[in-house]
Image 1 (cartoon, rainbow, N blue to C red):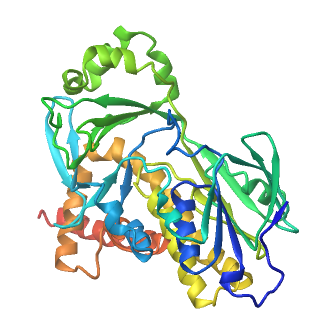
Image 2: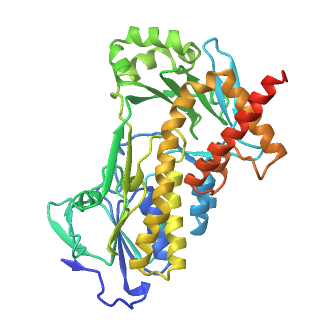
Image 3: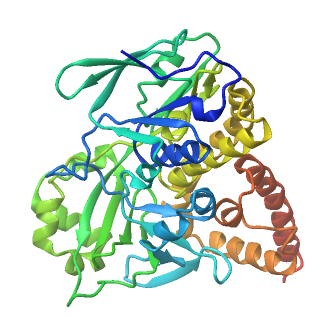
Length: 437
């Protein structure tokens, strides 16, 4: 048994230990924040150290890094290092059935999203001497009364740990959150969307990208869609999002080719017919879940962040950014309330829950927009009106995507402003149509 905690409520951060459960993106960034403040940080990750693993398993959905995430990285001096590994994305590129390609810019000139390939553990956390990474530690249980945690190690032995604060960053199926579910007045919901996703690879052509690289390529087909995102090795990761029952209707290689000839004919020569037949069946379609809960804390002992608090479907490119912003917001509240966990944790819940719920809803909404609305002339006209009004009144009218992706406007405030702007825009459009303009 290892007791890292201190009973001295007046002790400084140098005497206190924070246990971060989950060594992925948000957990590792959190470790950096706490270590920078002088806390002793113990990170516990159920997986083995990927730096020493012969085979690294996992999904490869590419990650979009935008303003919120960059600001969070900047605070701990990691922005430049991470950004240097990204590919800038300027626009969506819409692929029609006949092969026509039409760009739809994300924002004003200079506003770009960076595309990152999957980052498992930003090992910058280990550069702090006060941080220790513990791999192959699976959380079995923890006590809400004492904060004691029991881990199962790779050799089959158990280890009991106590710390002053537990930070649950262990993903959508969080083991830390299970104890929250046993508490009175804890709200929790999870929703699986009826669509799954399947990944395919588009190889380089003569050593170069097969399509223009600085775009999010989208093949919107109303009830389903495919996207393609560039990788540093000049490949594209193509992701097909489709209802599970439609995936189940395609059972042979010939049916795969027939399906792609009907809906994505321009991709067949780029991916390759043989590769399509092989890779379509390499793994089954994967599920996507949206998680909401409240509150994010238990007394002054535990707090949830990242997917453990708010897993979102990937259609707004904000999952990682929202998780990184959790770390930044918590850090800002720590400054405001002098690192007093009994005050910081409830304030973090009060501030952050409405924002994370808002981005979860927006991610759901954006899936409909990406697979269907971008085909609509009305959608493109509204986009044009939005951008025109933003040029005329840049401080009064700001497109929703701009607020979410290129500012730190609180997510729930961005939604409120969007609804107001939507009403104003519709009034202008209908008035223009009435006057025959």
